[in-house]
Length: 498
Image 1 (cartoon, rainbow, N blue to C red):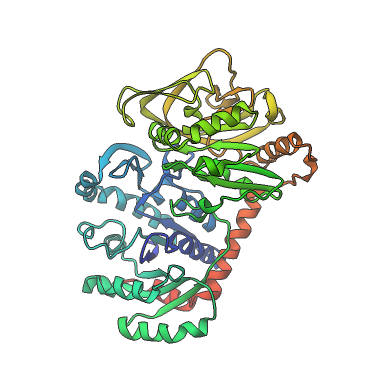
Image 2 (image 1 turned 30 degrees about the vertical axis):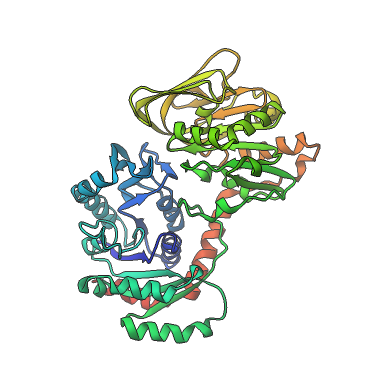
């Protein structure tokens, strides 16, 4: 069975996912077969495996860092919030249903067999498992029947490294308070602390580290600098959403929906020279972009109503009427039609009118579509005609079925199974395929269309190898972890276990 080590944090966004990915890359570089594991993940940014199963993007990123294919075993439970008090519960990549927070709290202990089956399967295949916790292990109101922090560490026999976020301030209080709120048995499982996101002179920090170690009797095994690495994230606290300013030759605006999902769809443009990609939450922030993306969402109808109430819907419709290119992906595509109906209560139930930019209707079905997708853009009309014939790969995750009526034509053709997808009408486009621009050719073709429309030379759009770029980012991350952590101590903790 694999040896195990676990990264937990003092709070959400303390950097657990990134540290886990960094350790996995280090272990890969050192010649080990290592894999990530997170028993329960809460995120809207998900991924579909080759088997058609759904898992969180963080474990996909970590698998890439480890140089292995993602497997749903790495994330057996995925919670996708549908509102402030409930989530869709996905177990082993398949939907179990929607549950309130209270109902799930009662239900989750019954999922331990599923969790351990997934974990043990990984542990038989790999030499090292790096587990990731969720939130904080010191949520004393939620500790009963814990399956993701100390409860999971106990089940896996995994020693714990506890990470605190110094960038938010109060890191010593974070670490001390977390340890103090743990039970005696749980404290004994914490073998090291990590101070994450540090900026400045480490020598100024060292007296505080010594005092912390004296108080909690746990060594600090690393002070990780604030890293500027471009790696997929899935958390609603991502800093990507802080981008509001246009600055490139081409300006792309993404509507920041309250329940935005799969925002990694736009990552290829974030890294492209000459293109600025920003997230917009108000009509006043929209400005005059060259392209407006309406992204995926876990609750299409409620997020459309939010756009309606905030004035963003009217702003987007006005921009489309003025010739601005508008493209919807998945839930954003559904919003562009005439009606959205939910006869089975998949979302909120009932029917609402859409934005009316496409002659089409969407009906939410009970069964979720989960599949990887590949195909080509058909003969594309209007300002994105340069996409015609371009191949793409991606994946579909949606509950709705959309019927396109006369006046609009399909945007793409999918293969395996062969079927049309999406719609196009004038300067408005839509598709169900997430990751449709992840391939270099597709992203470059879209950017070239935007350049040419502004009278700029498309030769300025350089070829961009996303896979090679990702590999460089993972190596940068691993270098930072290796140089900032006592890896000898980490290996000793890994060997000793619990």
